[in-house]
Image 1: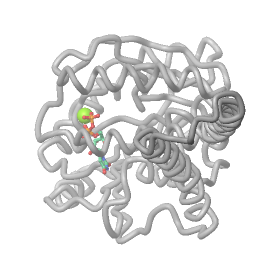
Image 2: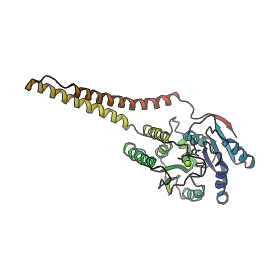
Image 3: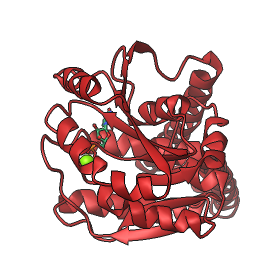
Image 4: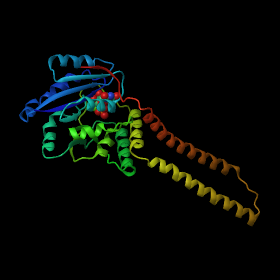
Length: 309
Ligand code: UDP
Ligand code: MG
């Protein structure tokens, strides 16, 4: 018998835990035919509601369900990492608790592993039911990433992925503290099959991603998988040096030819403001990378466990 582990990050998902279990276990007979057993890891990412209690109820009824709760909210990326560490399966799949990642397509996904793919990933092709401004920024983010990063980051990619043990081990070998899964999947490579589906709206509860959280997450993605902003900072430095040089020559020549007194402090103020603005901006970029490096160097654990059942 082989084993398939499902990793489900949960943050305040009390209303979804049981529904998810029901939906997921509908695949039981399919996988039994294939001689594959199922196990389910709920990763409670420091929920403030009754998520853990709901999972414990399930554990009493079904020994294949497991719970790992964090000491506080560490974020979905940490939950995914914890799940990878805990899962024992020959195959591992990540799913959201809110049923936005339909467990019903798991058999289809498994079919591709049988065909020799190492991982099966999903992307949504529509963003139906999402605020317009959010979709707009998301599109912009993926477009920028495509330009500035060598690692492929697919637009609309979800974290819903089925993979073999080998791929899971590869992901585990990336020990970085600043985790950006969408990029890490691309970075480890392996033969990946992409499945597409329309956006499915969340069943119960509400999204944990505010616009601001998404925005900082996108900055995380950029700094984790590209150093292009640093190159941009250096480019701005060179550009303004050249401009200043041209201005100096212009001023000297004008003085020599026409004897103009150097005039115009308004233009001076403009130039100083512009240049110091650019300087601070570039310093900020450098600071972002320094901060990331600082967090990595501290080498803190990615998550802390409160309870494991
Ligand atoms: N999640 C988590 N920790 C967090 C935020 C979210 O474990 O800090 C989980 C959440 O419970 C859900 C999944 O990650 O199972 C996706 O979150 P959500 O549905 O809020 O995001 P969206 O689908 O809106 O992108
Ligand atoms: Mg969701």
